[in-house]
Amino acid sequence: MTDIVFNIALGKVASLAALTGGANDALVMVPLESTGLVADSTMRDYDTLSDLLAGASNEQTSVGRKTLSGVTVTVNDTDNRVDIDAADVTWTAPTGNAIGAVVVCYDPDTTGGTDADLIPLTKHGITWTPDGNNFSLTVADFFRASSAA
Image (cartoon, rainbow, N blue to C red; front, side, top):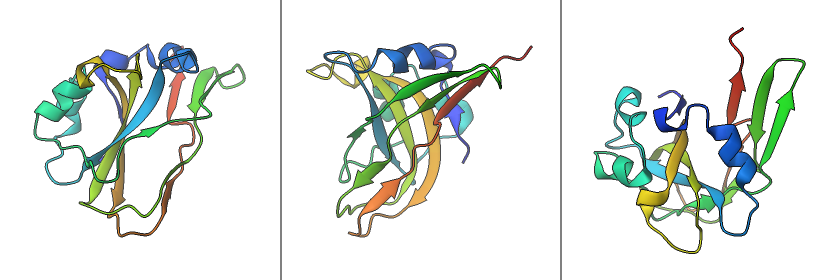
């Protein structure tokens, strides 16, 4: 499974990532079970996390969602691109069904709301079966946009 940018997020990821750090918004990582994951060509068309989870893909809820910290948006003039990075994510003593992907979403209001408010930005394929051992996921430049010119 490859990494994708959701169609709804094309051209928005850098601006939404730059907004985080405000009073009530954040980037949130949502783990998805490996069983039932839809094809990337289908997944990229979902406009909200609610839409994504209404399909065949299931959230792996026993490990839980993680709010990304240390989000940085860096304009790289040398390589003509924008890089977005975040601190690594760690789950402590996680268990449950195997995970096949994580989705990074923009949550405009962390004080409430629903999955219909979360905008899926990127999906990253991983292979992980939570077995009770701590697990750390490196989040290095989870998004990069460059000029085609």
